[in-house]
Length: 50
Image (tube, rainbow, N blue to C red; front, side, top):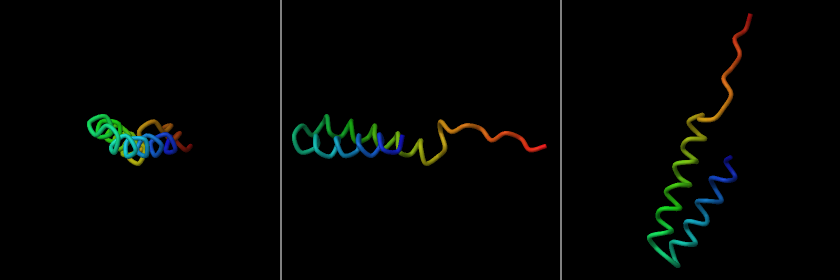
């Protein structure tokens, strides 16, 4: 998931030079995905110890 987020950010940067509005939106989506990964969204919950 972190690879996907970084790839989307890089694509957003490249599109930022070609089509600025598309690049901003794609880069923002990648940034949101990266922040969600760092915050722990999508991870499995820890099982309780006995």
